[in-house]
Image (cartoon, rainbow, N blue to C red; front, side, top):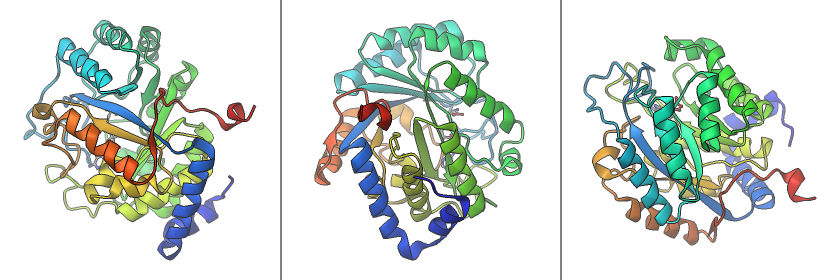
Length: 335
Ligand code: SAH
């Protein structure tokens, strides 16, 4: 559906009409992608990062973090167990940790692909040739949020990074045939409603296959510790509008939403979302991947998380996706 910037700002700011917005998004979700919720098994395999983003708990400058990285074998073993638990997609996420060179990552991707799963990478910015090598090794999807399309704000929050380069990475990933996931945080300091509306239109124009929208949650060990942060309500309204703008894409109910409210992900699933990323990192490591505080399920095991999520999904009358859960374009579906 086409909404212009003014329509979007109007719906973003109008909390009195949000239930109506959520209902509309839920209906579109039902009509375009159905009642299945696709589960992804998320492995947070390294919290070592060369970047210093002001909002992020694992930024290079945070000296209080105990840093870890999984060995090749640990990572493959975690993925194997995820596949045994029934996950049809394995998402490998980390800080920008250059220890994972092309040969190393390609070996890992090739091993994990043998478990009959889709592989998603979420490891940040790399040169084109590396993205190409990962794709040839079997990686199917790539997840990298643009964070915000307000370039001035982006450069304030990620002072050593270039918005333009990040954007070019997204274009390169698309060209290489990855299914492309991107997204934003809402509630960043100085972020305006107008800029969130522009973000949504940017994601629509880029025609992303997956869009992750989460509230920014201030972390006490970062320069933004005193910032206000985003609310669940605003994140849900933004997400619902994303569903209206791109009806047939995958939209996750994000962990950050759940961290703000125990029913955050269920509310998201009822307001346009159709994907959940379940943490399958072993618990000794999951506490250390602290992007923001109060991340949920830190003490839980992969098996526990899986059964908890299954229960939540079924309690609202939805089913668990049995396939890989790729985006199926509506134009393809109705042929
Ligand atoms: N290095 C990878 C993964 C980054 S972590 C990459 O660059 O894509 C994954 C996401 O967590 C980020 O893209 C960001 O949107 C989100 N994130 C980081 N810090 C956060 C915070 N304090 N609150 C909410 N989300 C945060």
